Structures are given as structure tokens and as C-alpha cells.
Amino acid sequence: MKKYEIKSEVCVYQDDELSQEDRELVEAAKQATQQSYSPYSKFRVGAALRLADGTIATGSNQENASYPLGLCAERTAIFHAQHMHPEQPIQAIAIAAWANGHFYPEPISPCGACRQVMLEVEDRYKHPIRVLLYGMSGTHVVETVKDLLPFQFISESLKK
Ligand code: THU
Image (cartoon, rainbow, N blue to C red; front, side):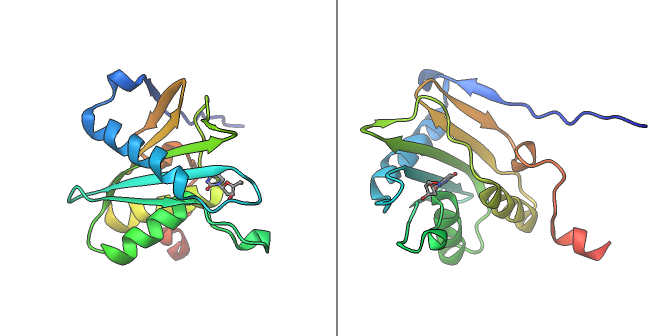
């Protein structure tokens, strides 16, 4: 039997420790929560992307009376940005959640489906995406989606 460990590095920043660029992105994600259409969960999620040319693109979760048809904030933002700016790699994504009148104390972490979509974007542009998970207690940051999704399944995996 062989055993190995997979490690992820996460840095936790207070607001005043973030760079201006990162603070701006987190702020855009927080603002995006207010565009959420979430009458069923009442859980408002906002995502903000920084593209290589500096453009910030945002998205929020969009729900439906037929529950499974709704879409998370992350994928709403990513698919829209890739439609509008297909030539621009995504450099960073910030995610925030709001419910019951306040932002979440702990960072919200993207669901598995969104992690898989984010991974495809990294693979498409061969460029790591910095992920900033906002919580009132701090912003948790990983430098690549691979830190959130070990054992990746990417287009290359289909060729083996
Ligand atoms: N949601 C997101 O938008 N992003 C996540 O990372 C987790 C969950 C949404 C989906 C649904 O509209 C609501 O939050 C409750 O699950």
C-alpha cells in the first residue's frame, strides 16, 4: 500500500491586508449579491471576475421555480464573461454570500459543479485563477482552482 497527501495552501486576509485590486474585486462580489434572483433559497451569492485586461465581470445566482434549473453565481459570471470576452483569460474570482440581512461570517466555498467549470477555464487559457472567498471574518485565498479540486478531470483526461 502506498499513501500520499495532497496539500492546498490557503491564505486568510483581513480587509486591510488585501491589495487594492483584490479589495475592489471582493467589493464587486459583495455588490453582485444584491442582483441575485433567489426567492426560493433567499441565499444571495455574488461572484466577480478580474479578466486579464482589467475588466471586472460579475454574476449572481439565478433561481427558478423548477429548482434544478437555477444557476450559481460563479457560473453565471463565468459564462457571461467568456461570451463577452472570449479572448481574455480570467485571472481571479471573488465570491460572497448574503442572507438574513448580512454577509456571511465564514467564507462561502463554490460548489463542485462550479469548481469543475472554473478548472476548465484554467485549462482553456493555461492560466491559474486566484480564488478569493469572502467572509466577514476574513477572505480566504487560493492561487489556483487546483487547490479546491484535487484529482482534476480535464480535456486531456479524455485522451488517455
Ligand atoms: N449557490 C451559488 O450561487 N454559489 C455557490 O457556490 C453555492 C450555492 C446558490 C445556488 C442556489 O441559488 C443557492 O445558492 C442555494 O444553494
